[in-house]
Image 1: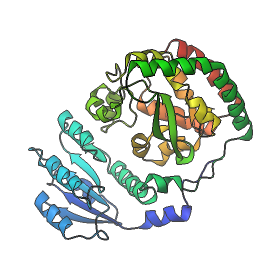
Image 2 (image 1 turned 45 degrees about the vertical axis):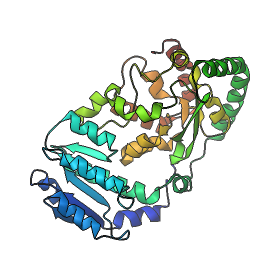
Image 3 (image 1 turned 180 degrees about the vertical axis):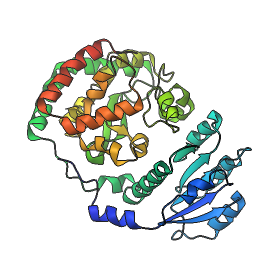
Image 4 (image 1 turned 60 degrees about the horizontal axis):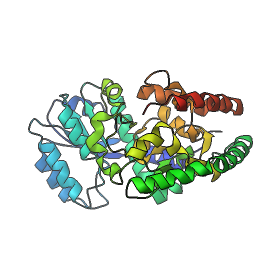
Length: 363
């Protein structure tokens, strides 16, 4: 059964609203703007100061939905965006950068500033329009975690799958309890910080829950993620599509502790997720629940399908990635395929194939 992320009537109202868009730049990216549909009400500015002056005269009720800014040779656009984000009224505005030149340092700056997206010419206009429409919907329907939790979710785990998950996870917890205790002691002795790493993840039907793992990194690991974006294994495939990667998987992660390297290699760090399964937030088999920043970047209906299937500890993507490095697009396709085709026997096959994946897991 495919869930409804929110009330269909609400979605239609959002889709039919006129979007207010501010564009600042030269004529290089202007042809892209000319192809936008009529429901975009566009203000154009040739210099950033004029855009700033326009924003200064707006109230909270008249702020634009999206700001498109063309990069400039001197990088003044990045300083301008820094100023925007310091203003409490403007810091949450949707900002997309357009560039006619491919420069890695600009892309890195965009990531550091947490700009919503960064496009390099040439690219299909419809891709940009689709991205903007998604960002607006996401902001309107799910502006905060509390609002996102209240979204109307109609997905239900099949009864057989739910019973299987509860029974198996309960007995697995009893079976591995000595390993859980010893691992907790080792983590506590090895480094300062909590034994369990808890983060917000987006699972089935866009439901947000606390995701549990044994802590394998230093306590400040999340803050260093942007600085280590060059180690992301998904960067190369995403650059081919002229965009930043959705998923994050770091190779040779320097944030990992000594104990963390061992428990990650042996997948012991994943064992606390059995409690997520027991609580009904996850299944033993399903699509990997994503961090909020990854889930927000899955923009189109094509990719959002993966959230209509169960969220799991292991899944089709994990066993397929054993034979080769799976690209971001391939991973999404595996997730979508599982969301449509999952069944009890399919889950059993994936569980059985997970065992050799764990035994031959890379560090």
